Image (cartoon, rainbow over all chains, first blue to last red; front, side, top):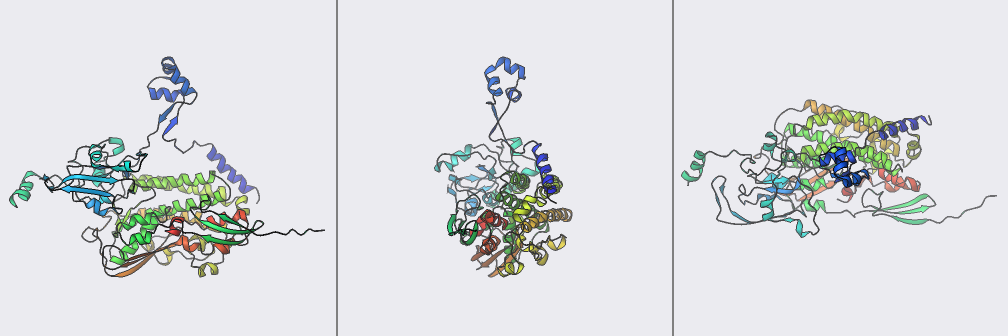
Length: 222
Length: 372
């Protein structure tokens, strides 16, 4: 019947038109006076009294607050988290990378009683300009030294600046994602809620061996 | 007295970078007035050599390449590839992993059909709004994928013999909430589009393909079912645990653009049914075999294997040849998008200019898969 279908369709459109939009403004959104006052930590009246310029800007919708959208905790972000104390320089990550973008140069001499013999790491460069964030390097790491990060706002003007050098990895904010790290989910660790995790002992799948086992493994057997 | 108007055919080049071509696709179309008299499709602009790249990567690393073939159906691509690897290497999959990948691929099928329906309506000229209605639901499914595997499009979730990690505990309530929410939204789509007289007049009787034509051209998927051929690999040749779940196969007899749209909307409902059953049947346990059984550097015995699944677009098959080393000797993809394009000329010749991209969109192709 001509017309009835159109009316039904119009009903759906009307119902959706009355809803609040589901889109999210990013990276910031414009707020009015009440939102600006909330962001500044004041009451609206207080804001107008103390900061009339800000209040006037907010009234003309020129005041914006940043929007932070928390990702899920398995989110494979692009700031790799690397714990040097756990890394033995085995280069499993470099071997399993489908694109071959991890460069590792090691020199012998390092010694780590807890995790076995290790190498001193001179170069650990990840070229995230070519990285596709598949996470296979993290899956390959036998000592849980490398984790996916949680951040995603890392735009640069040059391609070369996208290579993360080893010094930057050492100083980077450590917010490991729980991609292929079930121990984080067992502990209910959420990088977006709990922030950085710098404690390298607690991020591994393996328990730290007691002194007796270590002596047996590394002293008596040698 | 009638006047004879003499018309001359004009050849128009459309694409490769035309917003309606669903990617980079080029058509050289000859019009007589508004009527199409000849079409020459030209593709290959998105060729990335995925099949060749697979030959120098290990069996696990190839998963990342399959994500990028059909980027609105990554989970389904993963599933087809993993079935081929399992067949080749004789891997016994872990049951919980199989249930999880069935859930993931059915969710992906809904998301893929939502994209197909949304863009079909967009091609009809309903710019924006109906597309956003479908994208809104798709975003929620992609959020679920991010919960599962940390990525929305390039999932790389599956591994030989299962999935890489169990679903997190927050996944199940979120999925149930979505499954409760989806049927009314699909009813909304029905109200908005299926009974709509404007949609009728634009899509019914346009670009009709007969079952004989399609079987000759080995077209599969919703296109074939829209002409009344009951061919669904999930039913005909059940892979994974599809023989343990029950679902209907929506069929339409017309074979025109409307039938193709209708079949996709109904299939979304069936996918929801399948996910509900999977959720009941899934049991705790390991999600992938032990590392000793399926090592990272998988070395399948010398031989070949072909595995096919019912992709949201048709039959997606992977053919792998092993020479006993850590990477496939040859990897061939039977891409449904490419094969479904075979009859493009038959579909378009005789139709009008305005219906050209509607018919093209109703095939539901993905250029990433056509060119690979």
